[in-house]
Amino acid sequence: MLDLLVRNARLPDGRRAMGVAVEQGRIVAVAEGLDAPAHEVVDAGDMLLSPPFVDAHFHLDSTLSYGLPRVNQSGTLMEGVALWGELKPHLTQEALVTRALAYCDWAVARGLLAIRSHVDICDPQLLAVEALLEVRRRVSPYLDLQLVAFPQDSLLNTPATLAQLRRALDLGVDVVGGAPHFEQTMADGATSVRLLCELAAERGLRVDMHCDESDDPLSRHIEALASETRRFGLQGRVTGSHLTSMHSMDNYYVSKLLRLMVDAGVHVVANPLINITLQGRHDSYPKRRGMTRVPELLAAGLTVAFGQDCVMDPWYPLGSGCMLEVAAMGLHVGQMTDQAGMRTCFDAVTTQPARILGLEGYGIAPGCQADFVLLQARDPVEAIRLRAARLRVFRRGRCIAQSPMATAQLRLEGRPATTSFMPGLAG
Ligand code: FE2
Image 1 (cartoon, rainbow, N blue to C red):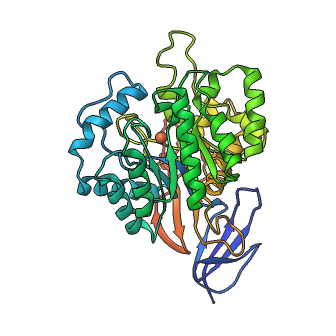
Image 2: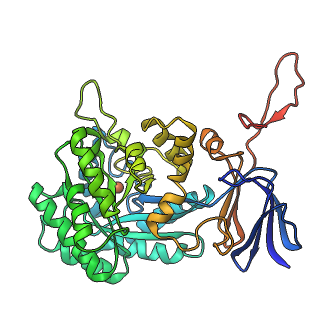
Image 3: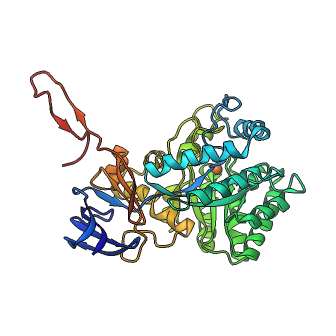
C-alpha cells in the first residue's frame, strides 16, 4: 500500500489527470489516471501540482528587521548598507534566530521549501553565522537552507575579513560569497573575485557573489567572475547575483560578455523586486529599471533564477515569501509577457533555482523527493496571475501546510446572493 496518492492533478508541463504515488518520502510513480490503495489519498481537483518554490537569493540575517533602528529614507542600496551597519552592534543571536525562524514559517506556508541565504561574515564574532547555522539545523526537517558567506562590508578593506570568511566556511557555511563592487577600486574587486574563486576551488564549494549591483555600466566584475570560473575549473558551480550593471552596459560589450558567461557556465540570479526598487535612484527621467538582461541571458542558454533577496529589512519594506510575487515582478520588469516568457518566469522560481542550489531529487518524477505544492490554479501562468493559494504543501510526502481555497461571495442586485466562486480562475 502506498503512503500517499495525489490524484487528478495537473502538472507544470501541461499533463492532466495525473496521479503521483509516494512511498517513504519519495515519488515512486507518476502516470495519467494512476490509482492504487494508499494510506492517504488527496484529490487535486484538476489543480496544479508543482515542485516547491525555491529562492536562490535571500538574506535571512536581516529579514523582518524593518524599522530597526530606523527606516531607509532615500531608498538606496547604500543607505540600506549604512542602516544595517547601525543595527549590527545591537543584534543578538536570539533575535536573529527568532526572526529567521518566523520567516521560514512564512516560507513553508507559501510552498517555499528551499532558500539560499547570504549571511554577513564581517562581524568578528560571526554572530549571524552562528545564528543561521542554528536555524539551518532547526528547519532541516522541512526546509533546505543553504548559507553563503557574504562579506557585506567588502573583503579587502579590513585585513581580518578573509580569515573570518574562512572561519565561517569551517563552521559549515555552504557557499563562498563576495561583493566585488563593494571593494574600494575595480582592481581590488577583481582581486577579491580571484581570491574567492581560488578558495572555492580549494574546498570544492560553490560560489555565489553579489556582482555589479550598480547602475554603473563600467562595473564589469561579472567579466572577472566568468574568467576566474574557467581558470579554476568551477564551471556550473558559480552564480552571479544581481548583475544590474548589465542593464546599463553598451550592447556591443554585452554581446561579448554573454559569450564569456556561456563559456564559463555561470548561473545568474536577478532579484526583480529589489532591483526595480533600488536601482535608478540617481536618475532623473528616464529612470532605468536596473534588472539585468534576463531574456537575453536565457536566450544565450544560461540558467537564470529570480530571487526574493529581502523581506522587511533595511533595503525593502515589503515582501512575504511569495515567490509568485517575485515571478510576477520579473515578468513585468523583463517584459516577458508572451506565453513562453511567462512560463519561463515560473521556472525561474522553481526548476532554475533548484539547479543553481544543486538540490538532489527535485521535481515531480519517479525517484524524486515527495516535495510538492498544490496550487489553486490550472497552470503556471494562472498561478502567477492569481498569486495562487497554496492549498497544500508536502514535504517528503507529508502535508506540512494547508490553506483554504480563495473564494468570494457576491451580493449583487438582481442576482442570487449566495454565488460562491474562485475569482479569476479559469474553468
Ligand atoms: Fe542580496
